[in-house]
Image (cartoon, rainbow, N blue to C red):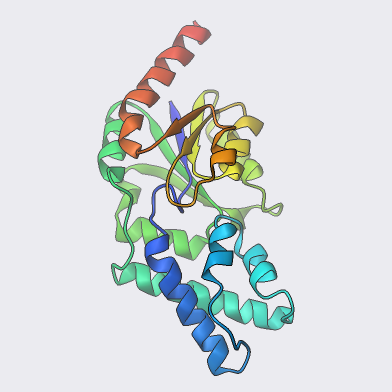
Length: 224
């Protein structure tokens, strides 16, 4: 059984460093005279999970591309610094569930809209690479479409049965686009109307200890 996880809002509690990093970023903009109001944290939360270029198009719609690019680079550095300082956190049971899945014969992958260096910082700090076969970033594909990113994993590893686990509609659509089971996470950034489209919804990752083996058995019976 192949299990593909989203990162932000699914494995990593992004909100623990999000507000801090965004505040640091907009304080930098204020210091340069490029922003004069409060940090738009709520607007960012409403679009949480989209690729960063889309973030800055939304938060800085009237700023030139050069400023968006500088802001993007500064924000990334703040995120990485806060991760390496231990200010973030995984969701409960991540490591226990990963260990259980691998011991049960599952292969684990990460497919995220996060940038490569950001994802590497999380994987390295929490030593997730001892369980994760490979981590894929939206930077690796031209379309910036989560479904295409998951397809890349499916094609590379010859996946015929598996699940995509995430908290947003892009994860659910990515699963369906690739003929995989969609498991929605009812966590911090999730929206009820999006989760309604998932095949299965969980309130905690520990539920995967029983759900994934059951899906594997079901897939085995269908194939046989």
